[in-house]
Image (tube, rainbow, N blue to C red; front, side, top):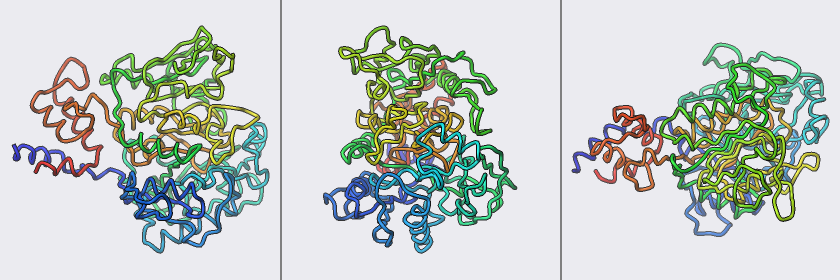
Length: 534
């Protein structure tokens, strides 16, 4: 039996970890002067690396790297918002110096920002313009919107984005958006070299208004911004430290039940057709930034999920119709009928939310659901939200709702049991919102880490988006859990070899089924599973 296990380990061992985002490639950024930042970092990385908190914590990911902004001599940041000037002085430059001094600029692949650090960068000439859609559109039409999330600016840590910024149209790369070179990727981030990450003289084609900066030049050349030239950035944040700790707990054990869980795709007022060209649907809009919308996101996601026969057809809960009676919503509250209840545990929530035509009401009381609809679902470990709402990531740092447009906040969804989220801290325009297609393809159906799947779904950087959750988390599926022990490992391949199973439920048991099992194992970098039985 020992020889059999060794043979299986050899069969899958080659390349098992080659493409995986590794803990030592993740750098957690915290500030020991901010208690919530320190406490989140300690819970994630462990007390040995982050002293001064609760103590005696092993850490959820003890292999990650950490850096304390206080130890770097950076002036402490205060509040959820920060100016470009302070971002450069207090975050960007200290992190540049640290990475360079430690020889890590080409070793780190992912940065993690922590609760208590700012999450929004103010516009240079109209600081809060992003909180008002009309003012944002004015900035857009003038090709001068410089507001952004802290996290997307950190992705371009080595780029001097504000160089030349004087309030004019497209006079700096901080204006508008830069097309994310990792968008739509189906390969792990480690497949791309970091050789040129510190090179600053990038070339772009620019379109206005907006503007949109699209990387140009020869693929692989220092002048062209590529996936290896950015850092993925995830945020560990929530309404409280306890909320962050709970979402980290949920991220350690994710097993999607391909027969009994559900994915909600509710877009409202759609023709229900996966149109290849842009139209007036929010998930297929190309009225603003060009080349930032994937083709009919909700319908394409639906079709790809249905085509993946590992998942029961009932897994995909899609609705194209408008009105409150067509709102797909969960059973944790009592709703005034008629509504469409999703009673199954929901693992993927793609929803128009407050932009849905019609909102259901709770009863008794008759409260409108617009700010808490997502908290109504039953959520197992690993639930993801991507709502079509402009300000769903505004409330972090105690910032709260935007009075101009109250919406479901990712922070409140996380407090109710969610695990991951992507969203916007300022008005993003519909063109740049994340694509659910790649969240489903690369995480729910695939083998990427959360950081990779999240940023493969986001078209724009140096813009308004954020990815919330444990960057190293990965999902498993019951379809590949052949040994039925709640985890993915070599024992599943051994069980399949002993009794071949129709993993993809297409009526035939063949090499394609085995390939699904092998691919799932390769997606889990767990050396102990490869060596424990040798």
